[in-house]
Image (cartoon, rainbow, N blue to C red; front, side, top):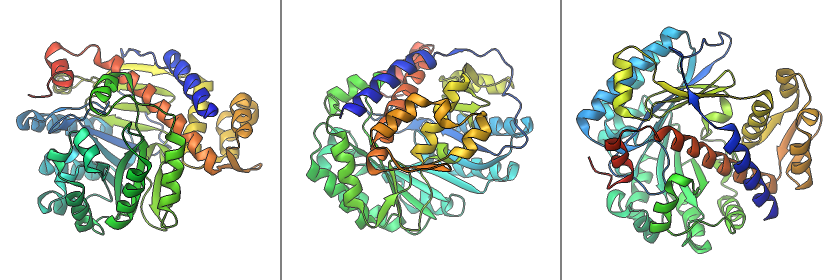
Length: 429
């Protein structure tokens, strides 16, 4: 698809210039906007084993180290509250946040005591769909997201997930047991594996329908630089040639029970909560190691070293190690990307916030999207997407996340040798 190739090339070029990090010399988070409501993102980097396709900050689990980390992360949450931030939503990602459910519950309870948290989302993995983990979270978590990735056993074995999390049938039964316990139960899937056939993808969509979950997110496989070699060794070289075909296959197979809630998230009609917090919250503040905060038009990146993170919090300092301030034009492009990814853009709010109409602000981007049939509604008030437009946003977001993973690569460059060995060696403590 020519449009996808052009998008990928342009975004890759832009990111190489826009996402260069600089050392952060401040002493704390910037002052909050008292009129704004923020999302609190908490990152738990620990996993029992590191997956070859994952570019997030993650390290092998070791209990004593993880408990030390959780204690410091709670202290950082207190620091965010003392700074004056008003957080109304909490998202806990990883890694695997449910590695220590008692620590996770204590962290959620603290956040709720300090902020007016109205909804909590947490990620998990299939092996944690057991009463000891799920039961304490039912009263604390509104949206529970489970990383399944595929219901094909051959793919699970390629990803080294079969032995760790069980067969597709075992995972399906665990999902059926959890279904209905949370307001929203989301299943994360991945499509466009090199060895994945269309029949495998159709089977994945069938299993989603059979599982009883009320939301699913189908991410395209992302070959960011840090995982490109491990992907090639395990699942094969990634190509985007079939991505559009596979995306439309998913959309058609999930319908009519599941309809798009974002470009790659699908909710059961009238149920579920949107998967991507970046759609509902333009600004968010992160706590933990290797976490991002987007505040006041600037990106703040916390140290990727867990040991350094613990030292920084113990000294009552900031975890932020690097930063990047974006231009007005970059912030406008970020807005159009995120709002269209959420399937609708408010033209009037855009004009109010930036002081210029979107067509005058971004004439090249708007012309490109119109030329490629991206818009369904395109009037004075709003923009919505056609099916083709939704795929273009999938391609744009895929490349955006690949670029963000390059930022993570920059941040990892300063890791001490022993921590780099954990990430890129055998993955054992």
